[in-house]
Length: 303
Image 1: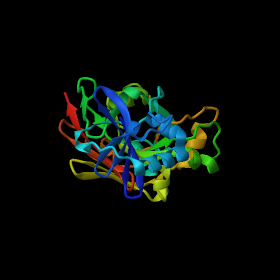
Image 2: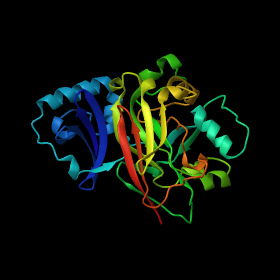
Image 3: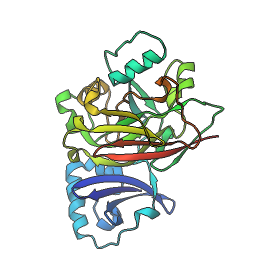
């Protein structure tokens, strides 16, 4: 089910599952209101809302002010990853913070080679998981699971060959992503798709924050902790390739569509690059927090 969460001046969207259905609704401070109760023509899904963009949000805000339906307690709802119904993979940008580039080469004893263009790969939709989900991995498949906290970008207005100066006009909002990675598979196959593509290896959420609610995305801070210990801490301004560059490069000759999601890269501090590598273990709790956007927490289960 998809929701809009309104906390003060912020508008946010979440998804949850109820009575066997993925539904859409609006979340207010004391619960959730099914969007069907707002009787807005053409708005029955999160993708409808993303496509409607500014006009759609204004209509929802107006309808919410008049709504008489009682909200449902959020504590009773089963969260899903807050994404629109789309068949596309999640686009991902690799090695996009200098510190992460340096630590990776240092850990492997190789000379540092800074990317000259965004390194793009993808994660299949089967990697998606929600905030609060237990992430279950088979240690017979990989025993070197690692975390990567990242800012997620949600496309609003589609387009091809997007100019950097127009990039933010194409962004609907932001979310929190943990690009969980099987390091042994990543090395074994000498590419990133398999090591990044295990089921539940892309927890996302708990919501999408609309773009206009983030005054300065460059100043936003991303922090990842494992069992309460800070492992990653950086600002979005430390990216090698900024958001306009990412959208411009990704859209060259390739159409971006409403609801597309981009994971924009992780800062330094990943487990495999520590002096003594620290891979995720059974029972570990990983939290990725992005200031002004949200906090994503998941427990790891290695079986």
